[in-house]
Length: 403
Image (cartoon, rainbow, N blue to C red):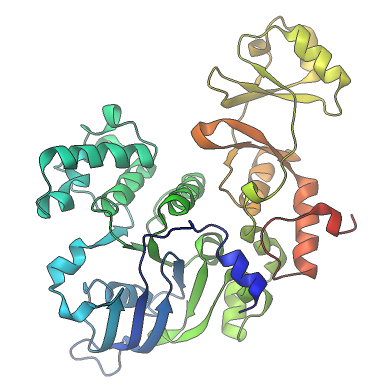
């Protein structure tokens, strides 16, 4: 791994990770009656505080490999070390309570409230009631759900995306150093999925857990992973490296098949919106008179403005030409259907532009407050830069490349 690609892999990690290293040493799994192992002699080191993504075809053994870490699937042979502890020497129930686990469709208990679901593992660990209640409220805030509004509801009363947020909160409830995630966002629509990915990146930047994430979606692996393990049949490790290194130099034809023909576009998934200089646009607030905005736009380079609510959140946009026909901006504002997070990738930004048929995308930061816009010109410059310097760390200086 080059120093530059290592810099990319560390760009999202907190300075003080709470995760621990995981080591798989010649681990195999053979099911009773099977002629060959489902997982054959896997050795892998997962650094503390990293997000490592297992990606591979269906049936290759990636989920079984991950589930052996918390012994939901017992290894037939080999050794697994979590931190400085031999996982096989710990009682399975104790081990699982010390490792967060998040699965597709959240896996929430339907007869329990959201508070009860999140507080389940702390309760099993004999935390006192006040500590559990405080932890539940803290985690709901952390995943963007108001405790007063959601804690007393049942899973059926939440959307799919909200349920997945609760599933992540439950996995984090006992503050585990390790989080296992088995295609947790696979059952939601693409827009919600992108939002959940952004939320996970934000949480990881704050918490620094060691996360093992299973997916069949290589684009998701590029977006989320500090490192990617591309697995073949029986979990044979075909390549284990940073996303930048794999995109630039696939180890063999099988890995190249995962990367696909759009490697240059996929490299947009290596750069976060937060790592580039955003452009500004004129703004106004709901209820404002059009006079000041009309004058500002007349003197500006661009002919449209972003409309914010009282909490500085972008809610709509307006064209200069329509301001002639209105007294307040609300009368002529158009809905802002595609809003991207500061944690999103430039690939997300491109998809938002295509969905809106626009040459730019509006960016929101903490609390969904307006941050600026990212433009198609920035994306083209970034693709050119990455094509010439594929292992460059995040943060692209557009002056480095001729337009």
